[in-house]
Image 1 (cartoon, helix red, strand yellow):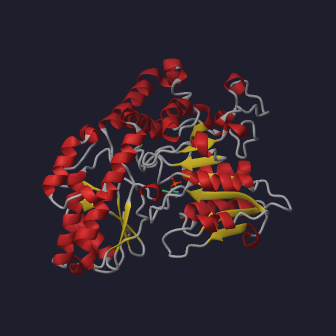
Image 2 (tube, rainbow, N blue to C red; image 1 turned 30 degrees about the vertical axis):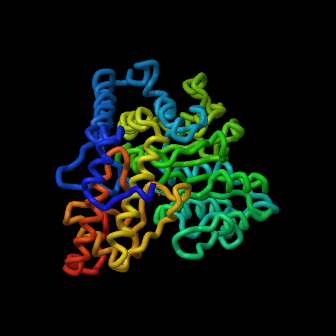
Image 3 (cartoon, rainbow, N blue to C red; image 1 turned 90 degrees about the vertical axis):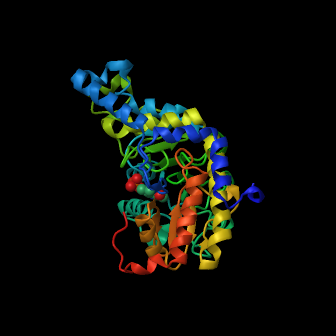
Length: 427
Ligand SMILES: *Cc1c(COP(=O)(O)O)cnc(C)c1O
């Protein structure tokens, strides 16, 4: 598509006119005079999310304790209600999904369920660019097993500080590796791994593998029936637009159904015996066996509303538009911003990048502050990256064009120089 892009507003508006997904924008709470490019950190609120939250609230208000029995136990079985809407995004069975916790707590659950070291297989492979909380969780399980980090933890190194080579990941799969945990998309550089290739290689070596979908769920379709990972975790507040701290999710491949849950709780019990109040855990054999406590209804309801958009629009159509938008953004950066010392830090190939563009510049911090004051909400990551996510549900070609135009203005007029270099926490 690259050759067809043009740097003018007319082209951008024309692309938006032809876009059938443009209708979704009106469902979102978009501020006038603001372009929201941070949907990869916290997706925007929508009419549908709010309605679903209000509905749940009214059921509580009207029914009290009977909320658990209304609508055929929809709220009691809320994990399943939501799993049914998430399954198409990763092409899994509904029974393979548990809607619970946060990414952090779900990694703890996954590791305590799957990590069973013995004297010949005990290493855990991660990558050195992964998000800190994932690594903290891995270090926790190592400490809980009274093992040494130096013996157990293997970090695949990055050659360029941006990306991780798949060959290096595969090379790290030695016979003493028990488990691997990798992100589907690297949070800073947007690198998308070939999950099928890596999962297959891990399985050939007898290694269990889990994926953190934080930066891909809702942005990149996954075919778990073909990839067949052992487990996966994700959050619901980034591309899924479920709201700040929305209840996260976890997948476990059905070949592991019945594996004893590491961190047990009464919602992991079979429904039929949950209220027998017996002290012997009678585990639900599906992913629901991973559930712990009572579902967080108000952290889940907005997600149920937000998921409507994905299943109406279709995740493949959304991905197609997202690739066109990030492709257009890269074209504009090359055309208009390269003379100012910017670099594109994400892989350029369609099958190797996620939903955001990683724009690098030595002055990225001060440029991101100037962007904010000029009505663009970016996302800054130390030391030099501005992440820009043209989320296809609520961003079009025109906004993408305008963002690059504003950055060009910031550079031409040196607007960023008016800002202090002292870091304030960027939220
Ligand atoms: C956003 C993100 C998290 C956040 O974890 P929470 O427990 O949801 O706060 C974890 N890992 C990765 C890779 C992320 O991008």
